[in-house]
Image (cartoon, rainbow, N blue to C red):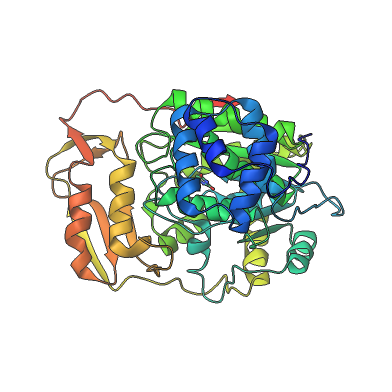
Length: 437
Ligand code: URA
């Protein structure tokens, strides 16, 4: 188990000494780490000083002990939840974020229908990857905020909760992540791993499955970087007593057929009804198997439970418990624009980043965290890599309430796909690239 940091005196260190130590390639001591995280959270270390330290960490890296201590120090700034009193085991999953990644929506009710409770504390989207809460908020009446008591009650009654993480969980990370976002220091494996794992460990889940995305639409563009991030997070979880595994999954192609809030809810409901795109079903079932195994449940087949309709029952109960109407019509964008195939042949590439940017520019995502999103906005793609297409057939339908956005969305999509002459060979890439435990 990771040790909980003891309080460090306010004057035990000064921030310049800590910045210099990392800038010069040294290792930070436990006491330096505990002090700087606490002092930054309390406002005694200024944003520009923490930004300098983050940049030094990004350039110099951190060792395993330092990352574990940095994570523990962030957890110690807030509350730690515990689900030990629930009548069933708990498991959660975290995705590092991708385009069309709606997997949490069918996955949480599926795992609950298999007998394992799922406490999913989620966030809103920033940039080209969507946020789970934004998707669910497109359902009329659905509320993201729950008290801890309501969350426990829903976990006991329904088995699954997807809600906003309260301000009390790893508050240091909230401040640090907002700072990293505006200072070019997001892309550091120690900082990403500690940020994600501080929240997941503080959340108190018994088992955790990480979906680490690899490819153009992901943080991690190469398999080697994704493996390093996954290994770092699995070690952090395991050292903290959380049974943790990671699947590395492809994000060079977007998942499913839709990117955009209400569009992705509709696609998730299709999966729960026994249909939906094959890749979304494959990943949902694979992650469910890992979550169940982590929680010690090995005698239930999630594919069978999905086909039985029991996961759909849990979905409806989960949405209704948070004020949503699972039967209500979902918001539709006011305007659509169809992009047709310029030539006939085989679609050999559909770029996740291009599709994600287009959906974002149509209004599905936000530029600043206070911006509203358009629930009906997004992109539907009518062909996936490997499909034969005919000149003039619809390739994409763009959805938005504000048609002046079409031009920039079209610019994002141009160059985002390739059509090879009919009969050309196409080598499909595997969806699940690696597993790290
Ligand atoms: N998600 C997080 O929560 N933190 C990061 O640093 C990156 C992605």
